[in-house]
Image (cartoon, rainbow, N blue to C red; front, side, top):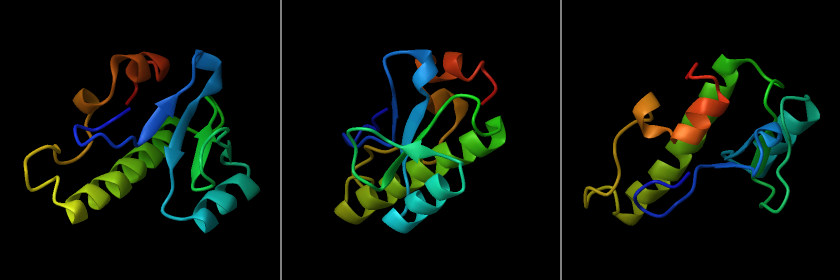
Length: 109
């Protein structure tokens, strides 16, 4: 999923079974999530990204990871000045999620 500034904060695979990949604050956080069994390495992405397979973590944790990923990307856009130009919405709400993601989550977000 891309914000209006052209930066991606989450990515869904070609099939529902894949899950969603999100960015973390740093490589250490990503490694910790993988080590604790809360996420998997996101294939084809930098080590700062993790994949959350559907059903691995509770819906609340999945939603939190999506919000964190969005905040990380949004803060980077704010530093670059894109937020000031009105290209980014504030916050992540259900309406900010793609229809495919909402359907994959069963509308529970």
